[in-house]
Image (cartoon, rainbow, N blue to C red):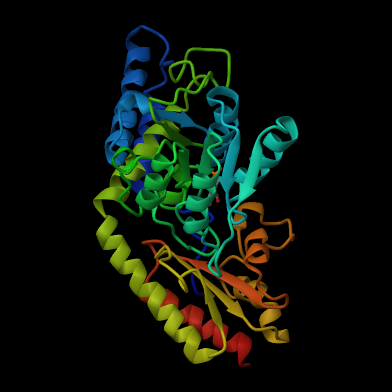
Length: 379
Ligand code: PLP
């Protein structure tokens, strides 16, 4: 029997063996409470602070500007909600193609703070927000604003230019947060140099463990605690730290950064070959993500025209051992359709398949996926 092929790496990635080893070492031998002052406690504290240093260095920020959280969702919630609560933000500009953890946080802010304006930028056919309109809105109205725009869209891969947006925000005295959950470990990110105020990361997107993430909070924009009850994370987030998760995350990021260029080249070749093969099999497919700008090399979002054979393509691929996604997998199971595709205005009936790669995929995987798809659509 053929081994399964996992092409859903925008949803989550498999753990690296080196990460498992680093975590196992902590779980077995480093059980101290990092808040204790004895030797076991200090040993655990050292692990956390070494990890924080690695993450801060990789983003070009200070150690004191990185806070550990439980995931990207928490980091995004923290920035949006606490900016309103602590920094006097009176308007948030975002996009309708953001992840649900941004959109649902904005719904909550809007319900609890009706005085805060929430505005959504128009997006292009890839799901990319219109930055000229952002500039116009910021120039026209000086209300104190937080701009929150993701670096790469998790469904389409469409990317924005973070330094450009940061510079527009700076020129208009606005704060800038980016959900960089899909790009940390895949692209160089220079948070301070580029002028970002906040960014969010999540370990399980770059071959680290689930249940651990981080947030960068620029030291000029001090937020108050998000969880009360202890002095952990410099009072920002009470609760005994997830030491093995933190160590696993920093190890995974270190390896991702060491191999960034190599991984990018390898995965780009896989994406291009799959796309060429799909075009040969079915010339009338459409690609969403890179029509009007760059897209993440790991994401290939393809639309198949309405047809009985392609309606069940996702399920048939699964039966034949290939895991892909029909859009955002973050709410998989809830067959509610994709808010991103809806916001882009994709015609109903077209079937979206998101293929997302990792360094573990091989060219022979692409060949097999193409042969499985051929059997499904040309039986
Ligand atoms: N932001 C983006 C762009 C994502 O793709 C995801 C997860 O899919 C998240 C946020 C949420 O991250 P987490 O799963 O760590 O909560």
